[in-house]
Image 1 (cartoon, rainbow, N blue to C red):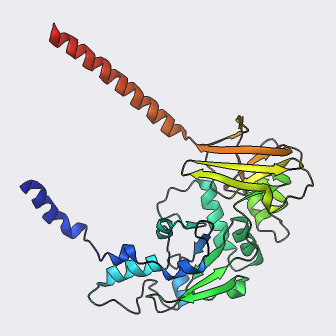
Image 2: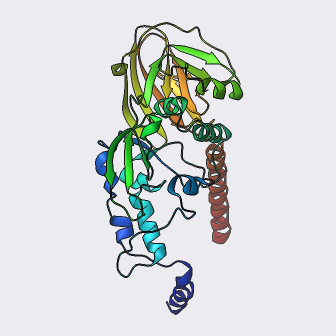
Image 3: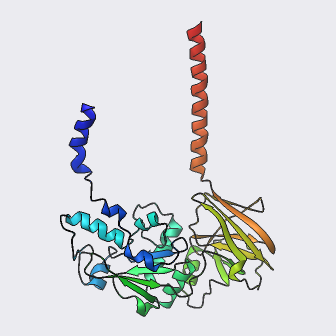
Length: 323
C-alpha cells in the first residue's frame, strides 16, 4: 500500500484531476438538436490553420471570456470545449459527429479525403450538398454560417467571447437510404463529381472502381428504409423497393465491414468517397452489416492457439508432477 501511495503522489502532477462539472455539465446546445439519437452534427474547428484569426479575429481559439470562481484556465477551457460539443465529447450524449478532423491520425485515406473535400467546399452550394449527403442535421459554430445556406436555430451561452450558434442543415438526407443509380470512378473523379452542383445524392451514388449493376429509374420514398437494430460492430436494416437499388449508409467504409442480404453474403462497396453501399434486388430485404476486421480475426486465432498451448502445457506439467 505504501508503494502504491508513493507512486500516486509522485505522479499526481502528471494527471491532475478537475472539477466534476467538466463531466456532468449538460451542454446548452443539446436542447436545440431534437432527438439526439437521430442528430448528426459538425462542430466548426477553429484550430484548423488560420480559421480562428479569419472568423473570430483572434489568434487563440481557446480564449475564455468568463471563468468560474476558483477554476484554472485549463479547467475552464475543457469545460468550454465540452459545452461547445467539440469532438469527440458529443458522443457521451449519444450525438454522432461527422466530417471531424483526424485528431488521432487513424483515419483511412478515403475518409481523410472526404474531410478535406468538406473543408475545401465550405460555404459553397456544393459544400451544403456534401453536408446533406453525410446526413448532417446540425452545424455548431462561433461565427455566422447563415450566408452558406444553413438555417439558424438558436444561440446558446458559453465560455468563449462568442456565443455558440446552432444551425440546421436544410433537407438533410437520412443516414440510410435507397438510391436508384450508381456511377463508378476513381477517387479523383468521385471528388470532382461530389463538388459538382448538379450532382444529386438522392438519385445517384458514386462507387469505387469495380463491377456495376444496371441502374434503375425508380423513385424511393423515405419510408422504404428502416434501421431496426444497431450495435457498435453491427447494424441491421430492413428495406422495401419496387426496383433494384443501392442501399447507401452514411457511415464510414472500412474493409473490415462485411454484409449479408437475407442471410446471404453481399459485397460492401465504398460509396461517395468514404461511405458504404450494398446493391439490392427489388422487393423486401433484411440487410446486416458486421465489422470483422482481419486484425481482430488474426488476433483471436493467435489468442486461441496460445490458450490451447497453455492448457496442453499445463496438463503435461500436472501429469509430470503426479508421476
